[in-house]
Image 1 (tube, rainbow, N blue to C red):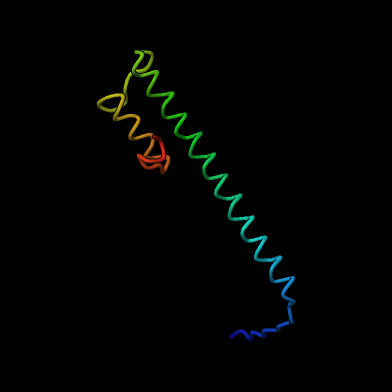
Image 2: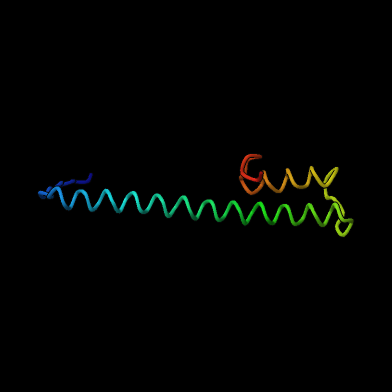
Length: 83
C-alpha cells in the first residue's frame, strides 16, 4: 500500500504564461525535428529508388516503385510525406 500526498503552491500569471510559452516552443521544436527526419528518410528512399531505376541496384521486391513504397512505409511515412 502506498500513501500519496499532494502539495500545491500558488503560481503567478507571469509564471503560468512562461510555462505555456515553453510548451509552445517545445512543440514547435518537436515539429521541426519531425519534419527534418521525414525529409531525410524520404531522401534516403528516393536515393535507393534512383539507384534502382538507373540499374545500379536490383529491386528487392517486385519493382523499384515497390521498394520505394516499402522503404517509405517502414520509415513510418505516408505518400503525402514524400511528395
